[in-house]
Picture 1 (spheres, rainbow, N blue to C red):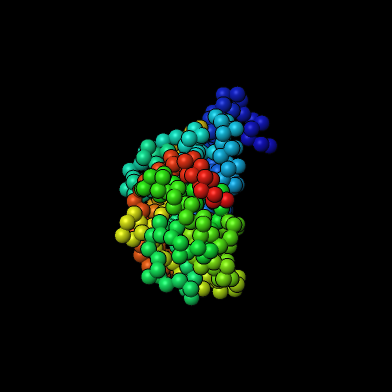
Picture 2 (spheres, rainbow, N blue to C red):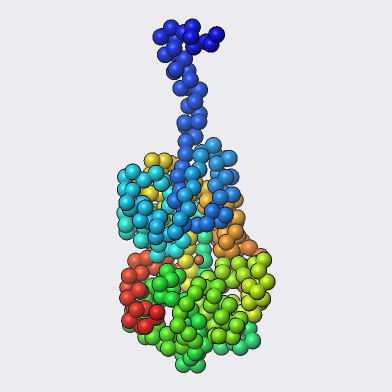
Length: 345
Ligand code: FE
């Protein structure tokens, strides 16, 4: 005979209360829901660590950057998402502008993430740094011939540059950075000169530009270093061989520094688990997580006290642009129009 059958209403109510109390610890730990534009294998092991350490259940939805933003907008107050993870300051700024993020403040985040790599008001925080230097053919370009991004518009590079299209947020952010430093007029003249030096009409991603250099179609490109890092450590032999034929040049060492960007995250405007989302954000910025988070995609830790991976250290140190990456988002629309006028397809 079961215990329940013998209970009277009052006892039953008491048992109900007791059962409620017994389940409280699980309720207190709760959950956090993430929309992530980063691939699952770039984030999942860290989320598992977080879940283990905190007892907070982590639910992960991965998708394309624009789809996740649209989803957040259409779900509005009913969104289950507490945290949005995405790459590029341009996209993080777009999320802020779309009203899907809220501000959070945290001493941990301010200590671990330099001011240049987070939104000034706390709408989003950078979690890893990506650099976009010049990558060149070892056998056809001498590093002494290279100096600045601006120099890539010089006539001697005619027919020698491959670069992906102006649809790429990476190129948009690079141009936005130039606008911030030297104004729109100078940047537009530069973009026209760069386009005049293209070896071919823009196509493919950053890896495809590196492969085109290896194939002799062009002599240099602008690419995010994690793509080259991925090729260096690739299980695909043709990628490894292509990577071996190129080298990294860090431009603007004596001027504004190398163009850098971030991947990052922000707490959603209608987060039901705001505290957990903040806790997860702090975890991702912690020393323990930073090393792994940056290494797994060959990016630089956002926290300067954590050294980059051996693959990245092999390319040497560089001076990074100190411009607040939020500026790249602010100037995105202007950059897109400018590239269009310059004929950058
Ligand atoms: Fe990328």
